[in-house]
Length: 384
Ligand SMILES: [Zn+2]
Image 1 (cartoon, helix red, strand yellow):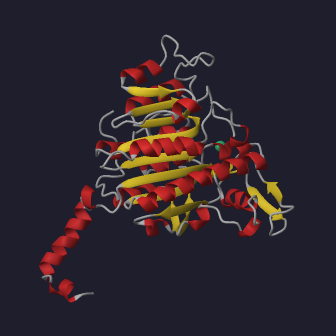
Image 2 (cartoon, rainbow, N blue to C red):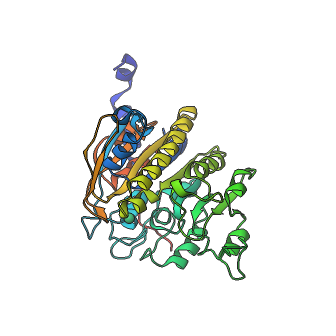
Image 3 (cartoon, helix red, strand yellow):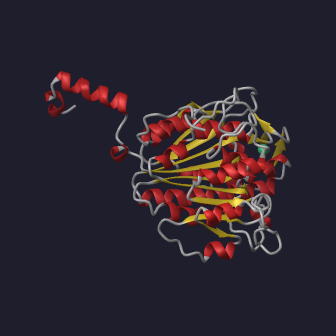
């Protein structure tokens, strides 16, 4: 240590340490201003390996994920089950609390807990959620609502809107009352509430890509009635996950105070549930492109932390043989459901080293919050 450090009187040094310990760093001086949290639903280690093997070069190919400097493991069990679901795992990632399967932003006894995204919003940051399933599905919703069960879809949809993030992009137009043929809202549609709240609504890929993003804009894009298609069979009216992430990033990054953006590669899980390697690999490769986008943004915008992780592994995928070139790879699936396998964590940016090692899933948002200078996270929610 330098002489300058040694010259600080002991009492002053102790006070400084105490202040940092008690108060955290003030928002403006926190190392992390922007957070891009990327969640691969069902993304286990072997899902990543299968995607790498599908590239030219096989085992020696390099995914964007492979370039991330810090990696770790997440222990992701639910409070009531060794094998978690997306609701409990996303609640852990969003709130720093472990809960029962099916619950969104609530503890096993029903107590509502505060999400890191809404806490960021309270502090003046922009927020956004992008997914390839219905925007009311477990992972996106856990960052925005408190509900006793993920299946209460209409309630979840209404609560997602009331949470009022700056960007909502994904599937689920049916729940918001959009007519699937005309793409116009039905009379009592929930989307009217969004328009009332000042949201701009886009219903298809052209609408999203041609949209002029303006300061203060709030955007909701619902591109299909239910879950979006697999990347390999995506309809011309549906944007890719990368396109959605690009537009979301453009919008939230306008805020000089910073942003908290969650992008979920939602359908890695769906493909793994049916043990469909080809579709699953297609989903992982698209997700990996979003990783590339996030890393590029973070390199250009210091103060941006990128964390990539999964909620759980799906399918119990194993790679049982093949050539290093990626030829003749053989796969075996142990399940058509989720498994209790640890899942990967990858990090890049200021504080990325805090995401290496073996972490409880609840530690991930706690460490992000600390790096953002949040002083009361995790926390129970005070007002309903
Ligand atoms: Zn699943």
